[in-house]
Amino acid sequence: MIEAADLTKEYRGGVRAVDGLTFTAPAGAVTGFLGPNGAGKTSTMRLVLGLDRPTAGTALIHGRPYRTFEAPMRAVGALLGTESVPGGMTAAAHLRWLARAGRLPRGRAEVVLGMVGLGDEAGRKVKDFSLGMRQRLGLAAALLGDPGVLVLDEPVNGLDPEGVRWIRTLLRRLADEGRTVLLSSHLLSETAATADRVVVIGGGRLIAEAGIDEVVRRGSGPVSVETPQAGLLARLVAEEGAEAEPGPGGRVSVRGLDARRVGELAARHGVVLHGLGQESPDLEEVFFELTRDSARHTFASAGMNGDRR
Ligand SMILES: Nc1ncnc2c1ncn2[C@@H]1O[C@H](COP(=O)(O)OP(=O)(O)OP(=O)(O)O)[C@@H](O)[C@H]1O
Image (cartoon, rainbow, N blue to C red; front, side, top):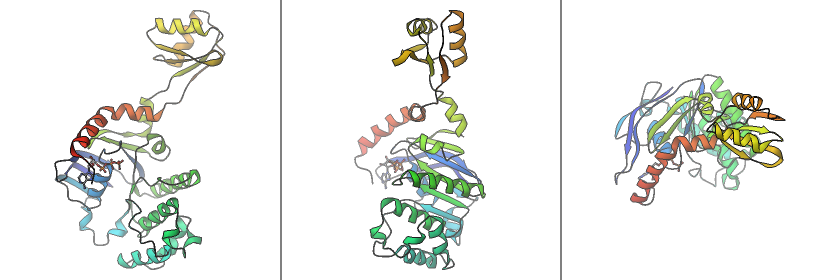
């Protein structure tokens, strides 16, 4: 389990990247960690991993700060970017080197290469790897110590559709085994397919912490209607104070009334319906709505403080 309590990070120059943030990533679940660019996701993950010290508050893993673990690689696996892998090394040599540094059994390198689908590339130099292969290698490094907690910053970056499906299945399995998975992303649609719950932040602050179903429900999509009397239906919908947007082929998209009320309204006025259904929500729209105000704030303060890092 990961627990952040009143976690705050103010960088030199006064940027408050994380601002009194409290959330939990429980064991046995994939927790999506979401926020627009600059929301403070990476900063939070760095605090959880003991790479930076918080200005205030705490970030605990299994009730302890990361720095107090004697064998941290066995407790926590992290993927924070792939730049640090030396290109001249082979994938296997890199992982063996990491295993030695973490006092892990040498054979783990081959095991994790197999787990991430790089078994056949073990002898290839990392500089010849594609971005997607580097992501897989980074994940292999995170899994090296067979840790109970995984902290992954945008692990889907650079993966092709097959890779995206693969990582979803892998993360699901790891969570089902009882591990804690914290997974950052700036796309709700991408996270919804993998995560059980989400922690949404903006401007360093908590915006929402909820089950993914709850977040998705908040953004129920429009009702799609097919009728030969589109004009009449649109007028009736408008009279109810809702919005109707006519489309091609007698289709009307209705916002502000659910499918049942649209059906009843049509029946009351003898409007013939050829189709009626609730469209699935546009998750990025939900995300945008949730984070809109904080994004404005973040962009304003980023502008005042110049370049990042
Ligand atoms: N080392 C640093 N020094 C000063 N400011 C920093 C530093 N690292 C990050 N920031 C600032 O802190 C804020 C949060 O950045 P952070 O990288 O944590 O956000 P993020 O949610 O991970 O964004 P992205 O999705 O773009 O990676 C930004 O305003 C950024 O410019």
